[in-house]
Length: 421
Image 1 (cartoon, rainbow, N blue to C red):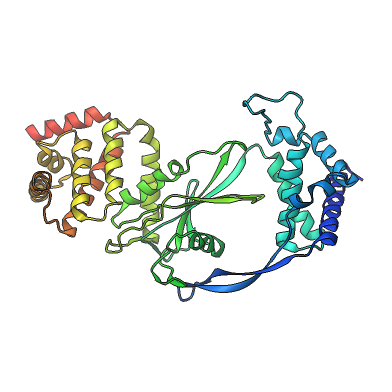
Image 2 (tube, rainbow, N blue to C red):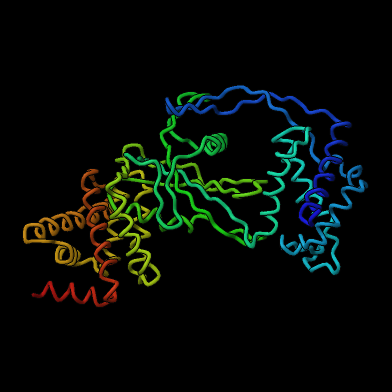
């Protein structure tokens, strides 16, 4: 028998022994609760009662299990195979100081063997079947010996639709439909995928999500929002339509012992136009991502803060708030407020007529912005905000394309020169 087969055999015997004790000492409990039932054909969910079998937790039998020879042998094997090192286990005292010659066995008992048995019982029950055991064992081994912890982060895309596409991938980002499991977890945790008509029934308007698989150190976590923000900005800069993401579902790619949801349950205003991605959009989107990704680390502060205000405009509920955000974004981008009308029109205007129209829009923007700032309110039409979004979008796209060969200061200098000509 090879060492690998011996290891499998030792783990199998430990798991069997633990489950046998639990089976003889207790019975599973049937509980009744409600769970969202997903109907993708009708794009709706409703709460349905279910009978759920709940098995006891390994921790309840710790004293009996700890004395089993098969368990002791399994714990010795994990120490011999350097599980603590690969899992980056650190044991400290009450003062946070490292413990000398730490005893890892109780932690291995909980994190590996205990989780293994609990996960097996939840999935398969008391009967240990070789095929089921090997599947979970292989997941566990992959988790232990992987250099990093692979985590899946998924964020629903509000107000987003795809036409003639099931999914698409740009670098490490994948846009796809939410799985049924993801929908259930999101709904159970208060995230609205659409309209809620009654406490037990609602629609599913948000079908799509952006997914990214990350590698983290096993004992550390990081804020997740920055790992998706560039992609959301890309979508917003590439074409019109209001797309938002607020909640992030986070779980391990293998050995899924836990998952988490972070972020507030907010919605893109339903009056906003949907962001519709078509097959014909993929090539220009991919090309723009290549340009964006190439120069994003060299963005000057003006461009960084301009993008910050542009993205903030997508979170606003009122059109005049959107207008203020976009006005700031444009002023910061061009580094000017007094002659923004000339800067914009000479930078993106393709002919005399378009320059005149752009000048008119920016002058109107200045009037509306002044009215809001000085009197607290101004009537702002939604179509006017859409025009401002498009002006910012075209402007920063041109900045990004020019940054390959020119600095930000050189671009601004060239704009000033063109105004004087």
